Length: 446
Image (cartoon, rainbow, N blue to C red):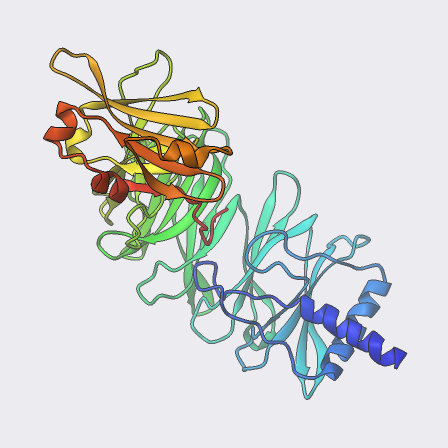
């Protein structure tokens, strides 16, 4: 009985190491990597892992990305049976980072390959099919030192593991830009001081050779904050890269394929910078109208009501493959209080705003306009209420509720002015244009 319980415990441990994964960083995360059936397979595989652990090896799973377990199951050779990949670190060896690959045949696991590399940890791993032959390529990022990372792509065809390419990288992501919807590898490489960082997209394999295309990132880009994919307005797919410049500003580069050549469609070729996307406000692209196309923010400063306190409107632009853009919507984003208001076109060049806290538990943004005497007149207030008496304050005469949750209530008040009459500002309009700002979960985001 005791032996049975020990075996059961090991089986449970191995089961807990199996990932709920996606086949690609930009595809559904609902795919379940089904483990081999029967406890004897678990016992037999666990014994092999235990022997490695006994010699000084340690579990060392990837530290980022979708696949983060020490034991992963994936059909890498395309024969319909999943192989087991075990991520270990053997500190005493010159190439301590090891991925042991086991093939299961007739209920028994046999070691068929070991992928070895230098470094302190495995940054991430992905499984993709670059050439459409059914066998997968294994994309492994390794942290060599605090400032150096190495990306290696292995071919698993017939389980005869071979290296497709190995390059230094800053960030990488799996995407699908090709017309055939095959997987591509998007890589951002380090650069010499003063040089633009290189971007390489691995398109696939042809005749055993890697096919890739290259471009450059905005000159002066210092760090990468986000990488994501999106459709463009003409239906083509793109990779959107956002990061910080050396002066602290935020940039957005958009990469797409034109005749199988990668193109940075936002880059000004004279300046070497995507100057139309540069902004000092730390606000990032998002699908603002939820139509599957990510828009790029462009802040516009409002006239100051309080000296030294700046408020912004955000113009959101969608791009096509030629780099032409069209404005989708303009918003006022109150990131401090977590809400957003769509600004009608007629308001844009006529309004200003200020944020005040006259009462504890009541944060207020007041929108104003300039009347015919060039004097400021308030026409709309949006309140963020908290505290024990928030319900009573929400019901003060003239206020109406926009959104309520456990800790906060968002309410508004419309002032009786010529502006509100002229532009037909009603409760229905404000309710329709108001929304809570939620953090977007972005597959492929760094």
